[in-house]
Length: 267
Image: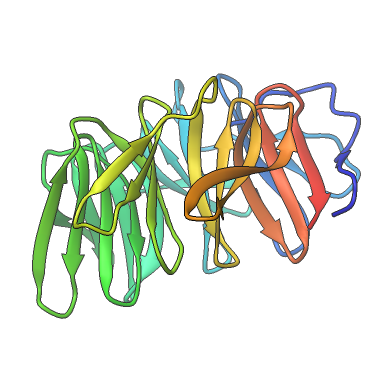
């Protein structure tokens, strides 16, 4: 693994909560309280917030089918050239993905899917849905009170009441992982339930699946989940800086940080 370096001498902005890298290596990143920004090559960051209502707060940026999406407190938006256009989901949005031939949105009032030009309720009406994860057999949903699982084969649901919100989901072939509103890690325990792990002095922002691994964004840096013997542990990838989100382009790992802009390292 090679040493990391700054994308540029980033004087403004320095605080980012989400980032995506596009196929042309341009970056789209959200800065809390400042909006969404675009960076192309060696150019400086420039504001990319046309079309967003005043007071918009970005929960997550997402890329699907070559289109950039912004999940916000004002709803779901898609980027067309340099202007954001609203998707009529009708609720604050936390996640967007395309699966099974449909677009799915996690919202303040349930899971929605897009059929044609219309958004329709899918599951958990009037419940906060933070995230969802598709696997060949299951659909997992992170809720404000736990995790739900839909079995595609049997067409049945199972609910796991945890007593706290699960804001992000990720999986390996052996385990399902989640980050919680309390900054802890939840992991499937192999006994039909979940266990909570609190790492001392670490607040977990998010968990993200990539290359059959699960990465953990925290206030102390970026980690990868692994095992020492039979014990789950965190292996440091990028220490010393609060990492809020990550994205890849080939072997280039891009990290949104709360204090040092967007950083990149080769993996």
